[in-house]
Image (tube, rainbow, N blue to C red):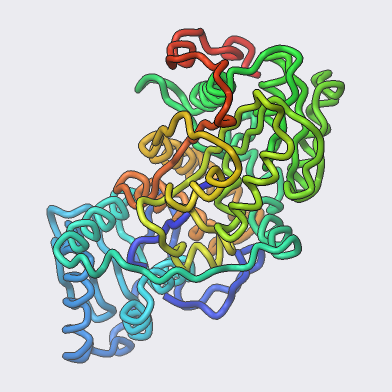
Length: 450
């Protein structure tokens, strides 16, 4: 999304790879109300009884996902799992969906739910949380399930531009419906349980600035700037100048217009280009929610680029979705939501710093903050699902509901992490010896909503 990856739990297959602007609906569409899907009635005489092998297969699927507190129901009513005390039901409406679940569960679950051939009865988020926790139990019992292949993906200039367009150029009006008013599409920071999403996003912006220890008059390079909120926060509240790179046409246009409107054009330059073309000298480098799209094969080159543009006393912060172990993104998210994305492990991230003369100063994991951020986004999304359906279609609504809910569940279960890594040149002895200044100052920007 800029973050928000690896989203589906065991998850059916449509023929369309379109993200849903005008996608065709395969099978019976699920009705969508308040995050719930309800199976459509099937007339007598149209239902084929499940074969014995299919009944065995549904038992196998239920066992492999850790026997979660839910029921799985086949098209003829065959049921396994908890029907009364669980969090809901998964209804498999067609035999071929069950077969695809066996061969490729992540892709099959995501496509089936999107197309309406696999239904969820009950709230989507609690059900996916239960599945993810069941999977974790299954992995502990069968450690072999932890291993997944890793496939190197292309992150060329052309491929990176295409991937960004696929997700971020869906239209600013779409994102305005359910993000906060600043259009911040990365993990928020919740200082208290009562903090709202909008407040938590401001808290995140300021937390990043404090970690970078910005000073008036400094120059900052930002790689992957979204709609420009961090650049504007840095310029307005810390008195720095910012050069920000982004490949998304719609995001850059919006950021430039907002900067002009708010009188910050003399402090911020938004560049619609690949971060690899970054030039100049800077006191700080920051990247929030972009590393997932860089590709680990480019990490060493990224470190060398940062080393070229940072001043001798320069420092940096990289904020990224990550993994505890090196692993591919799940196939449904890779195909439909974030093509080519890869949330790296800390071991992989070290390729940025090793060999480029940097010392890692701090690593913080904000995993549970991202679980709540995605849950808040989902809540906002459900309130405007009807409008989203009019802008795109019902298939698109289901896809994005699944993406947001499963993202929250995946962070909650610990399958995904959110790393903030602070670094500086190895010879820099000027930085404070403690982190006190990160936590004691009041948050800037809360009173103005900027």
